[in-house]
Image 1 (cartoon, rainbow, N blue to C red):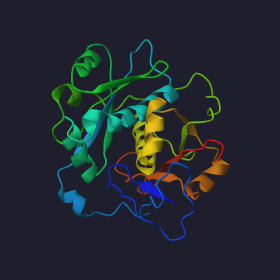
Image 2 (image 1 turned 180 degrees about the vertical axis):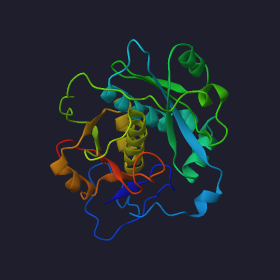
Image 3 (image 1 turned 90 degrees about the vertical axis):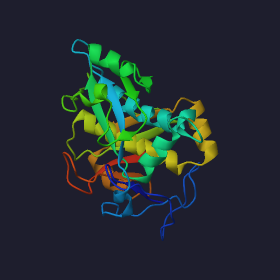
Length: 261
């Protein structure tokens, strides 16, 4: 099976692909999407929404890069699975409108009073080892709340103090393309897409199990020699629309349910 998603592009919905391999355990059989998702389609006529994420970056104690990436990915999953985002929940209409148009995620940074103002808006704060990311229900592309619109997109450059350890078994792994250079904020949006593709690919039982376990996942940069195999493996692939930083169609993330695979 192959799942491909383009950042800031039309969402992809499952359909079978010729020659697709057997789905890994917990994946919906036939959950496959087109390789070509960059083209304009009717969803462009729909009102456009964006999922805002804000990462807390204090000058004296910025979070580690990998911690921020993993926390952002979990934040997307928590938003998608929250009762307010489904059924008749308070955020469900906004989430549906967002998923019916282009799937956009924008990461901004905040500190001090900016962060405290952001926390007062409806949303969910997810904490990692040291990182804090607040995710908000989707908003119109040109209708950001004032306290979020004023936050900066640039400046989300973070670093790891040492090489992250190998992923622990039993969780998802979001593999970053080793040949691309992206800002940390851009990477946070991309791994959020990768987490969302895994969520869409899972059946209900797998989703419930993953949620109950607290969405265990790791973000790692793939070994260059392994990248081509990952993108051709049938695992979900995020392909960027190329509006910022990288070329259109670039594969940014491969989502893996089985670290040992």
